[in-house]
Image (cartoon, one colour):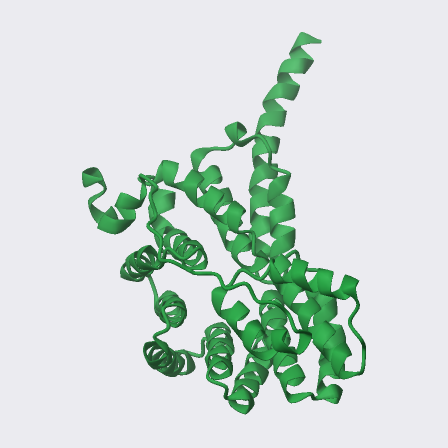
Length: 336
């Protein structure tokens, strides 16, 4: 029996390691089509102590990448925090652009705007290819928009679009079209916004990128309720509804609720007290400053919705490890 137990132990250890590797790879494979499934798979890896350091870092990175489209901001920063425990490890340094880019996104969403600029610039400095540089140019343009510098944002998008077309980066092109549409909507150019969103949706559909289809679909629905275009809204609503409700992103589901309530109102529905309660609850789930401004401008007035003005002050990020991002000197890791 003792001999059998020892043999079993020796066999089971490499099998467990192989299972972890397979699960990490499977979670990575789902990132484009279903990042929520990536998070589900990663959640089954509970004993972090059993993972090697490279496996731990890989798990944190996949978690970051899945947390962004699913809107899991707490999970995002927790994974970044955990990854920075290994900031000198070769696997960390190899994925530096991804990590600092994810950090920049979290900082932008949480109004650490100056620090987001630092993170994106560090990420750009370490970008390994043109595709990464294009994605980061898009991130810098988004940040410029957040800082109300629309001229800078538009210039960055124009430059990025030329490069993306030249290199056939279809995913980046779809992202740019979607974000250009948001700027057009902010400027009141609804027809132009629709053109951008339609191109973005087609691009995301061709790539089978679910999170992108949801974003572009919701943005087009936004345009259709502004235009009071019943036919186009009804055609797009069901596929967008199916994708959005199956996707664990509270903000996107909240926006969908607001758009549908406005559409129903246009069809003659009288809003009840319960409807107004749900509108308020979902309004609180819309965290993006610019998106909330668009809701305030185009939809909220029709509901006589009392808008609570929120001041978005530029905050200072205080994690101790952020000094490494500021110096951005991983080539000289001994100096960190």
